[in-house]
Length: 496
Image (cartoon, rainbow, N blue to C red; front, side, top):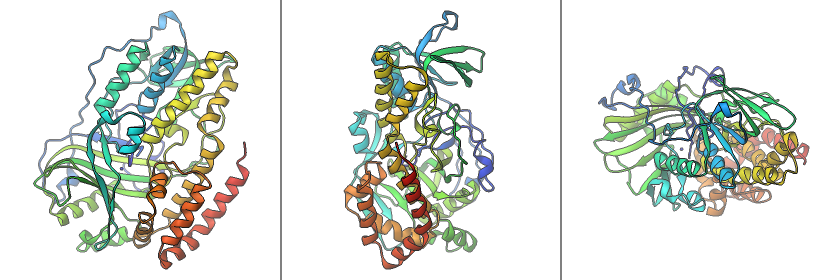
């Protein structure tokens, strides 16, 4: 789902926290954005979804680079740039584009600057429309559906789209090149701060001096510092873009969530596990015989094993009569959700996953991060252009613009929501979303798109409670008491 954003990244930091999760390798560059940690592969093998062959598939990795001549940073000049951006994902390039438009010098540092992002980003169309990015959607659907159970289906009249990764990156790179952004192909190993400037140390030995350093490396948290224990929930998913004989879905609607579990009737062990920590199907049908299918665990601590999710997907496809003829892409994704914010403020500025911007209740991030890029860019331009401040003081002001008190309070409420979701089994989860999608669009749109702030979030909570069944109300009260107390305590302690 970005609905869940999938972010290729370094998994080593998180693997020890995932119960039984196999180590994955990724050759992709760090990326700020269902926000996901992701390995994406391609295959031309044919298999039947009625067998376990899907689980044994080992696709051949394929990389695709854009055909651009990038202006390179020349180390011999020892030029001090205004802004060094570590990470070339959507957020990093968005900030590079906007800061350079103001005439400031920018260097983007990434090990694979021309690599097309290997992620399937799904977004609500209105989010991209607000940012003038409709030309970067390659497929749109008039709405979405949610299958709560076998008898309850919700029709969501909110258009949904799939991001054209090649078009979005091409558009951003073209503007960066036109604005004379410099690029350096390397990883960053360290940053050394002086009173005014900072020195970014790269893996190839090159050192780049900058007035401001921005960490846009996603969940690898390359440079941004944290000072609290990191114990997030995890969203884990397995997805494929597949050619199929057919599927039962309306090609004009994407499947936002399918919580049905009849496909597990013949697999009692799987059904028992699913009843405790459920997974749902997320699907984007491109045509009658081409579709993106993803089995997803919304949030769990520790995260589900990838093999468990794959087994559930195979059983679901067999039950739905979906025979997979060919897999174009396959993705294994992990998203850390919630957890503490980084140290606020600190010398290195962050954006995206490294700055704690993933939605703690949903895993959404790409639209939120792209919308935050102008805030960060304008703040950097304003403070650098005025020559009124440098170093720690400048960074503190940018962090304050990125994470004002209202955004921190909003995130605290979202973490409260995640803490409740972590405690819900399948039936309780169904009851929760049955009530959630019965809310006025203003509430569920705003919650999913991070547009609600206090006190609107309080009215959202009251409305959700009033729409919930008596059983669901009891579950929210009993399982939400401790998280509620934690949220209130954190809100009281967090002051500007």
